[in-house]
Image (cartoon, rainbow, N blue to C red; front, side):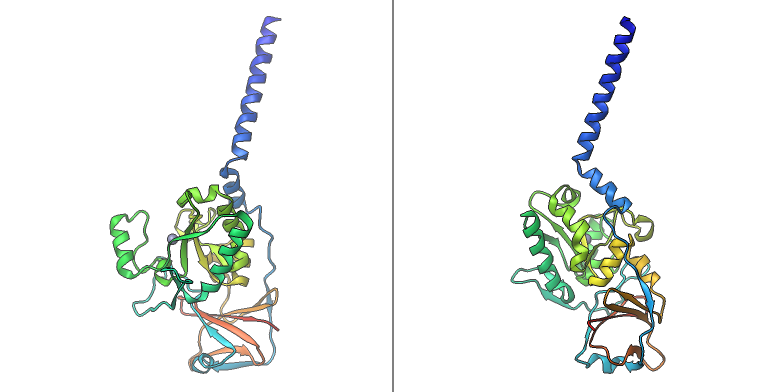
Length: 288
Ligand SMILES: [Zn+2]
């Protein structure tokens, strides 16, 4: 009889211990990170091929002066295999009246994102690192090669990647906050991605950085986040010359032909064209 009581007490103690561990874990950010790793917040986006009619080959020079076209750098792939070229010049602009230098293409989108963070979580979003010169990257790399990328391979040198934080919570601590979790699961709605996601190390060769956001533009960010991809995988998935439809956007990755021309549907209303840093351009046609 005594033995039975002893076992019952031991069993109850174990149940309590397990409940305690689960409760602590549930309230911690580890559950969130695990969810992101599995992609539980994602809703797969259909990416169908498309055959727009009345295609026309247009010279890049002509496209550059076409009012309907905006050239930017939003879809440049920058990593060890695709470093920035020596002649690369980032298109920079100052964010509001701060000293923060951003790539021009994300200035407005970052404003919208930080406003949403404040509205949804009450926290003010700050930028700890935005654009870096080659020399600044070199200095960081020499200080600590384990945390800084080799000069030429950092997105910070394009002004397209930003390190963000909220008061008291920078680096990994960022993901413990509501703002960090909002950024990680919703920044795609504003055209940003977590460039080095928890599930992406095999492709990006970078450990999870919940604080490093990268602008790519809305339709692309929507596919990358919801289809659980890395930027590397997404760009690879766009076959050269094929058109894809994502919601109302038409997307095509193309190499310029021997006469320096890209193919676009004759009657497009507005397009964004970005080099992808692999030798192709990515065309995004929005609107009807
Ligand atoms: Zn960074």
